[in-house]
Image (cartoon, rainbow, N blue to C red; front, side, top):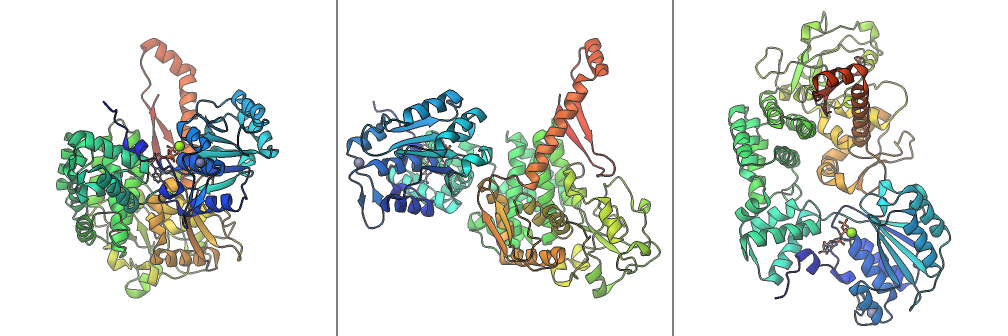
Length: 633
Ligand SMILES: Nc1ncnc2c1ncn2[C@@H]1O[C@H](COP(=O)(O)OP(=O)(O)OP(=O)(O)O)[C@@H](O)[C@H]1O
Ligand SMILES: [Mg+2]
Ligand SMILES: [Zn+2]
């Protein structure tokens, strides 16, 4: 009986023409072969299952094939010569594949160096493919560097990795680098339809859409999930079968929860959360899915079509209706709350409680609160619209408005009278979840001379004075150009500025990289997302509305309008959010170490034999007033 070959293997590309979605890379590699300008080292990077290994093998095979042909569009290896056949069988002595994960030591690299000196047994090139190259040890990288610096003329290295940021700069600078793209949902969909047709499988359009979305940009994941569904449902596949077999949460549940939140009906939203929970779904997945739908809701709200929002048409239609119930700023706040919440849920020992509180908070939130200045009256009408959006410091909800410390008019740098301030309730929606660096420092308000404000979390509180809409939510049209604190201009500073008006945009920026930050006039404002981060955040910044807003923000913050470029690329650098996350886990680890090694704790544990409970990390008061939960020690 023939054994079953999994689809991902059966459908492994074997020629350049089989590779989907990586057009520019494939073209460049074919050109290099045709024009005989082959570098000594190539690096293929990108997320999992998008063709790095496949491309490396095809490149090697095509370089070595003596009968290579150009068919007008593609360069093809013959697949018949001995070199092609040995490579296909994986026993070529001249194309050596090394798995960096299992041969990561300096010895493995030394062996390569020794071996590389000898000419290939046939043909002109000896090719080393080092997969998962980021797994090499530092010593191994150093050894590899020696070979890369002075490679024998017949040697070619093809390195592949999902984590280019772990590769030393000295290595990177010696490689020609290609960043492969993740697949879009539509691309995966097309491929799965081809595979289904060729395999004689009947699959509903809705089922293909679900699989394509679940694959999260990876073709291998798409095919593996497809295998899983075939094993479950056989040769006729419905959307229901896909959901059941791969554990997806019903889109109707997700839409129902959002409808509850958006229509301020916390009760029905919670009821659905409970249903999903009882059905055995992972709450982290639920929260992540809700985040994706909120992202889609924001895109739909600004008029981006359903394909870009990556939803099936009928779901998009429903979501668009739901999105009408709230202002875009509110949806952005929900997005941010869920973004922080998702992280919190994954750390919490009681994720359900966290998720429920988050849902209730969002459902009952009013987005903006207006605080009258000490001794002054709130302005009204259009004049207010222009001024109220001045930022103020956000405080945790445990403080009340009456405690608000006031600043006198004389602290205002421009000498204006104190202004009423509008405070987005971002922080409140995620109290205790807002990462430290996202909270503006008190000095900011000291510099702008605005009253410090605190927020109340309530939909019906008298403190929630106005609905966001009536408070000039269209701050983009009415917002005056504000003085921004003097001092060095940084990307972080820019993000804090954006956060005052566009929290979701700020969150998106945080997950991107802006280096160099364009404080000089001739530099463009370039935000780069790594392929891993691109799917969620990239779309929030690329609409023409978003770009023109970003330009307005650069004008406000830098005093110049910038050309804005948003791109997806692996830069090997960490985003603001990633740096913060690293910093936080480092601090948590330090705290944990300090606590565990404290003599008093050691003694207590010796006495009572207990385990440590959660460790709470308290931020210094002047930094911000939130605290974050640590994990169990
Ligand atoms: N660009 C692509 N075109 C067509 N199929 C692809 C592509 N990328 C991946 N696949 C499918 O996924 C399988 C795995 O691809 P491959 O091993 O090349 O991915 P990878 O990027 O090296 O993944 P990893 O990072 O996990 O090593 C292939 O056998 C093929 O079925
Ligand atoms: Mg691979
Ligand atoms: Zn050949």
